[in-house]
Length: 266
Image (cartoon, rainbow, N blue to C red; front, side, top):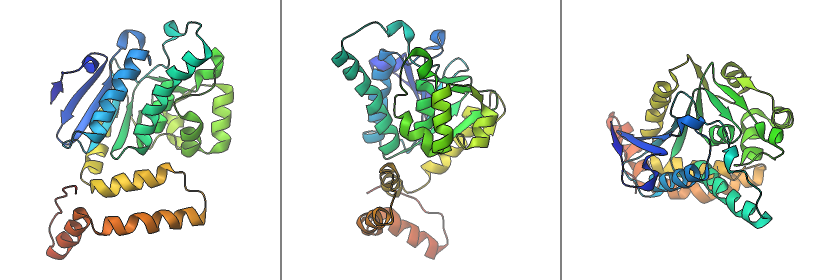
């Protein structure tokens, strides 16, 4: 695996390519990968590039350096500002959230150590969460007099249901990786130190799937389909496009010829 360097993001957000998988590492270990402004800017730039401009990338793994995921916002940056300044600074985390949830490529979280505040939000926004049993989670926002951000209102209830999401956000209590698995927040629980390896295996499975269908499915799921009519509308609008895709035709041909499909996006 080789590390990419060519942008201001290279230090605080590191990118490694492992075949079709991009490993995105939050790299601010001296502050437990706090979600600083510089990190937000770097993460958005790298995710946008990987999602929309890097054809060799078919799936993404998000992890953290120094045996921790992300301990939340950088409190040293929380100086008093004007309301409009706060609003502008909050737009970037929401842009990151949208990229992860609506973007065309699957994102897998590999969580070790702390995932507090914005770290919890980043993990919740991923399509699949692999957690160490010893990882620690908390929606810590209310403890510092803030509301949950980076899309957590939506993503946490999507993962654990409305009742538990409400409790976790209001109480700000900590929970570990084992509970994350039991409640459905995490898709898989592994031994400490094994989250990244397990996440890479999951990401490889995503990378081998048709990319156009993955993109359309993520777009449909991100709308939060709630009614029968919305489900039917999504199917009617998207399915005909996918039936004409090269990847669908390749899947049909491979099935008929009894071989493994080789998917190339349209």
